[in-house]
Length: 80
Image 1 (cartoon, rainbow, N blue to C red):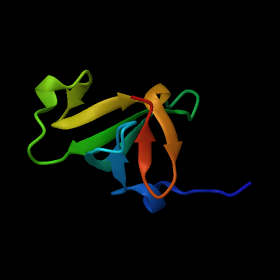
Image 2: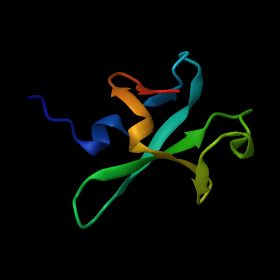
Image 3: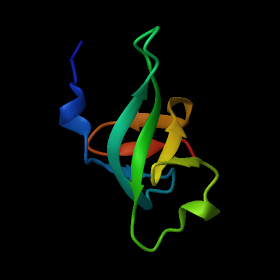
């Protein structure tokens, strides 16, 4: 199994299920008791109003639950 390190995917594009650019991956939220990633933090693309999106913001970043991530490759694709 290939191992991916966090720094390798930071700043990757984050796209919705239609392939439209939402923003760029800025950070992760990790559950310290399990070590599991529970959310990704995304810098929204300019022109996108985070208030119109279904996710909360944390320090100006979109906080998207990891359950909404469909795949991680050259881009991070969301399930919706």
